[in-house]
Structure formats: structure tokens, C-alpha cells
Image 1 (cartoon, helix red, strand yellow):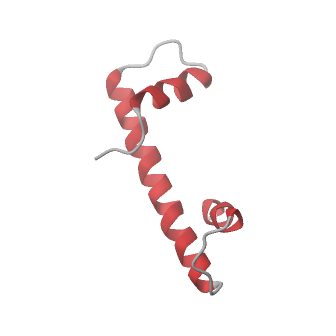
Image 2 (cartoon, rainbow, N blue to C red):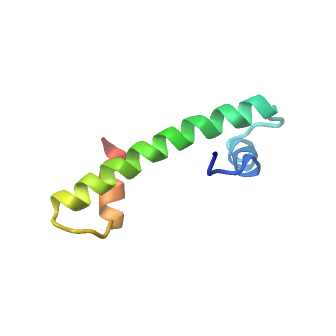
Amino acid sequence: MPTLALAAMDKLLRHAGAQRVSEDAKQAFREVLEEYANNVAKKSVELSKHGGRTTIKSSDIKLAAKH
């Protein structure tokens, strides 16, 4: 089940300059962002465990997003 709302996808794409956004485009954008976010989340967990922590810090997320 998707986590991100389609309305948020529409807002992001319009903020980037799109005048109109199809439903298929919103769904595709959501799929891409959720896959990326899932990968960053998994890397963040690995980084916190490597640091001997159970709490994920913003630095873990920022570092995970760079790789």
C-alpha cells in the first residue's frame, strides 16, 4: 500500500514547474520516490547499527542519501 499521497506528488511536480500533471505521472512519481525513500531508510538503519545505536539520526539519513 502506498505511503505517499498523490496530492503531494501533484504539489511537488507543480512546484517544479509543471502546469498539468496526469494521474499516471503522479503514480509513477510516487513509485519512484517511495523506492528511493525505502532505500535511504534501509541505509540509515544500517548506519545507525554500525554506529552502535538503535536511534536513527539526521546525519544517518543525510549520509545514506548521498550514497
